[in-house]
Amino acid sequence: MRKRTKLFFPFGIISLSLLPVIGFQKIAEVYGEKTRPQYVTEIPYFDDRPGDTLFNPAKLIFIRNYETFWLSADSVENSRILNSARLRLNLLKSKHDTINGVKISFSDSAKYECFIKALDICQEEWPHVFLPYKNDIYAVYMNIDTTIIKEKWSVERFLPVLNTDFFMKITLQKLQHKKTF
Image (cartoon, rainbow, N blue to C red; front, side, top):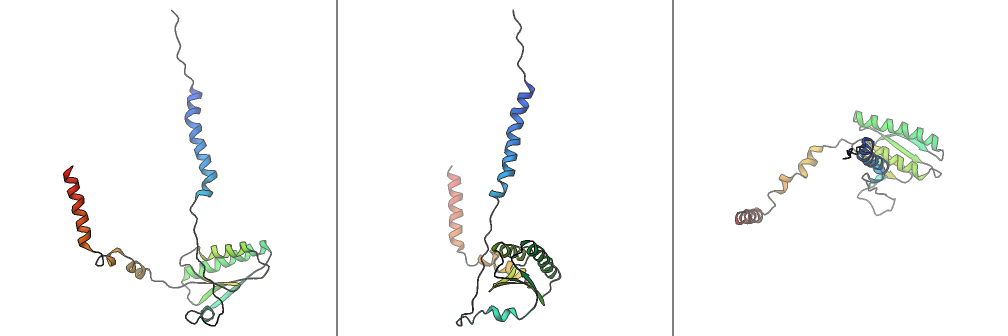
């Protein structure tokens, strides 16, 4: 009688178990940027029409002292200027400076990507308070009381408004439904 040997291939077993894991990891790295959540920012633009007296940004602009950063067509120089604007704005926000602000001005030859980078800079640190007006972006720090926001939108505020009889009927129906089974 012939003795049968067991077929055992350790390299095959290792490759069958590790290759799919490594492959999925590489796929996740490659497509991670494409599948990350995308955020949309609503940016209101104002113009100088004579009918808008409720909110006129031209009046708000002159309330503070602004340090101006000019952006032109040179992308290398613009990246240096945007970096210094980022440092200045983050310094204002960290010191809670309500007197000064940052004004980022765009020349007619400035690229659209500089505008997008400037908006990204304005949204780095909270609070995100900026105003695009004409060819400029005005970014400031405003002292915002977050306790008012939390109290305004808390669930306890809306509990008296809710019809408690309706919710009691629903919970009783659920309890009766559970008892029948």
